[in-house]
Amino acid sequence: MTRYAELSKHPRKFLALTGYTVKEFLALLSHFQAEFEQYMETHTLHGKPRGKRRYSEYKNSPLPTIEDKLLFILIYLKQGSIQEAHATLFGMHQPDANRWIHLLHPLLNQALAALGELPSREVEAFDPEADQTLYFHDGTERPIVRPVDPDEQKQYYSGKKKQHTVKNILLIDAEGRVLFLSLTCEGKKHDKRAADEAGYSLPEDSTLYQDAGFQGFTIAGVIIIQPKKKPRGKELTPDEKETNRLINQIRVRAEHAVGGVKRYRIVKDKIRNWKAGFRDKVMETCCGLHNFRLNFRPWHYKSLAT
Image (tube, rainbow, N blue to C red; front, top):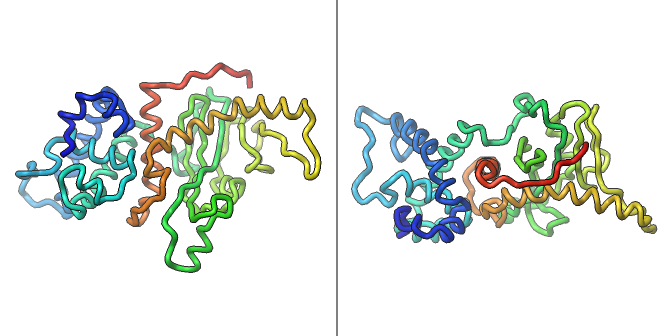
């Protein structure tokens, strides 16, 4: 059975399985523990209201310590394995793994929210830092299991990816942090349309880098920079190609941020968790885990004059 006490002795394996170093794990642990203890004061492990009896760890618990509980949910998000396999890893049955996943995931999300690491989800609540002038946004698709309903099959089929997907728009700052995450929508929706529907705004005179998928997207008072599309039947000039190359060297930060979020395979591989709202909430959680990790392992880019 996988246990924190043993796995933490192997730093490389620990990082590969959780996406975090032991130091980063311990920094998150106290906040996760506070959320868990607060929840258990009023609820049972099955989510029912708690009576007068206080919570205590039951005998032969498959997750006997708070470290094991955080390890359990981080490995699930990082590896994206089926629940039967994840249950075997921790010496429990699949129904027990399912219950623990849907108990611990919301608590991890709440811990990241308390730390201020989750991206904003509502335009009204989105308040970019006043001193920031450089932003990036990008759309990312995630594969899902082929829906059974024919109408849903048509709705979620992405011709670009040749499979059924869901999509989110991420707004990213110059350091690679995800500031805003749009609501999850069908993967075939165009990036520009999804961004228009999200309706976010940026400080006046700031600069927003985007790719050609956002062709025509604008924000009042914001400088929009994107590579020039090749004219139909023609070629770009050498100067235009060089300009595109320089733009892409800067805009790649958005790709880095998306890749950082998708280190967690639960939002990279085909998601098989059918719980209502899980597809959207787990993307939010993985953005928060990415943002929290940057506090310890920041990305360093050359400063740009915008």
